[in-house]
Length: 88
Ligand code: C2E
Ligand code: C2E
Ligand code: C2E
Image (cartoon, rainbow, N blue to C red):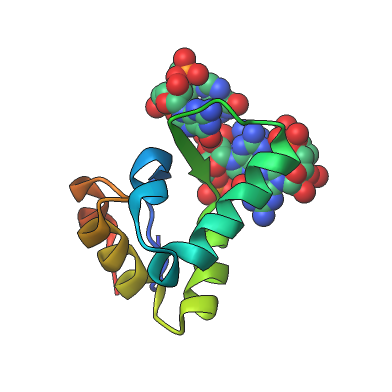
């Protein structure tokens, strides 16, 4: 793998996401809801998203993909192992 793109699979904790204040998690929560809707995948406790989606979300949050993954780990939305995938 090259560049600043995390290499590991991104698995969002949907239960944790729902507990976060909307001013923090709002954009991510809407993005996850849109993916669930497109997939028809409504019953999961977690949601696997594309690496490419993390790049889109980083633009929305005005952060690098690595900084956003770090933020998501701090919020408990990504597991601590997601830190290890940081390469930038
Ligand atoms: P895994 O990717 O490690 O996922 C483990 C479990 O996390 C899944 O068990 C499921 O309960 C949950 N999970 C992960 N991502 C999602 C998601 O986006 N939505 C929902 N609703 N749940 C999710 P499950 O379903 O028994 O799958 C076991 C393993 O089978 C998966 O491990 C994966 O290796 C494989 N698998 C299942 N579905 C797919 C798929 O659509 N594509 C691929 N490539 N592998 C799949
Ligand atoms: P699409 O991108 O044209 O993908 C069509 C189908 O190909 C998907 O149907 C899925 O069965 C499979 N597929 C494509 N890429 C992957 C992948 O990386 N892993 C796995 N396991 N399967 C893949 P599905 O799931 O019903 O999704 C329908 C449409 O919803 C997709 O059409 C796409 O436009 C959108 N979508 C679903 N999940 C995501 C996502 O995580 N991110 C984004 N950006 N769009 C998504
Ligand atoms: P996964 O299904 O285990 O796929 C792992 C990686 O294999 C994907 O990483 C992607 O690089 C590649 N891949 C798998 N299927 C396809 C495909 O149909 N077309 C292309 N071009 N590449 C494919 P990525 O994109 O980061 O996705 C990570 C995980 O997000 C996937 O793991 C899957 O669990 C989920 N996902 C992504 N897109 C979709 C989708 O459209 N529908 C569903 N149901 N799940 C998706």
